[in-house]
Image (cartoon, rainbow, N blue to C red; front, side, top):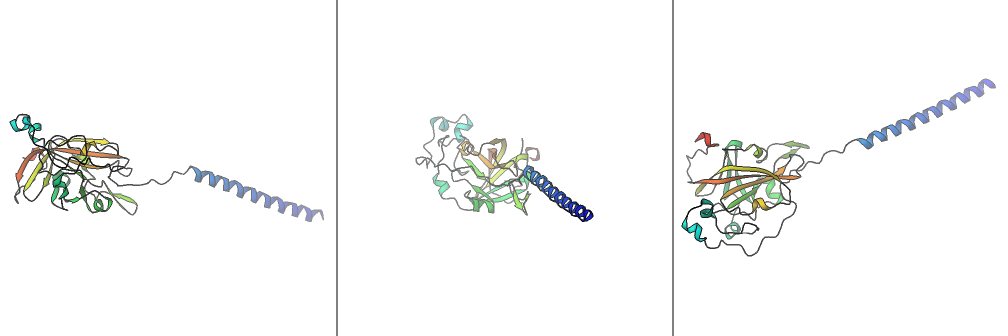
Length: 250
């Protein structure tokens, strides 16, 4: 009798030990799960956080200023008189069609059509012209273009988007816009990082330039990267122009 009692007691103790061990293991597993970091969210959206309304009364350039007509400061000569602190849609921009401009950045191997607009669907196809951009033929234009910094494939970041490497542009590098008649040659001027809500880089700058915007950092996209080039030459379109990548190639 004592032997059976001892056996039963031993069995009960083993069962209790197993239950306790299971509970301890469950608590440890839950504790580990609670400290595991969440998977990072990857974004490649290049657009500002919100779209402001354009100023409705600035759709055409006013007459040139007397200083511009008289010559002198090149910036004044190029200035088309449009406001510098507003967003607006010019008449020329209203008539823009997909691919009427090409963006060429020889250093990066970029040669792509500039599409009409910067909505999400358009930018999945390539780079797009801001609604508030001016065209190169409008003197003193800021031709502003948006594009994705990176793509995603199988949850991994890819570098197959046009603006992935634009942060590498530097002093002496050329950018080009091309339309049906002219080649517009721009010289790299600056690169900066801004807040998503800052629209001032696509305002008219008072001189002819091209402005490229995209997201940064890659895979986080909580700021905007802005690259600007200043117009240095306008060349008649020709099939034999070699598009030098840098001032050292001329």
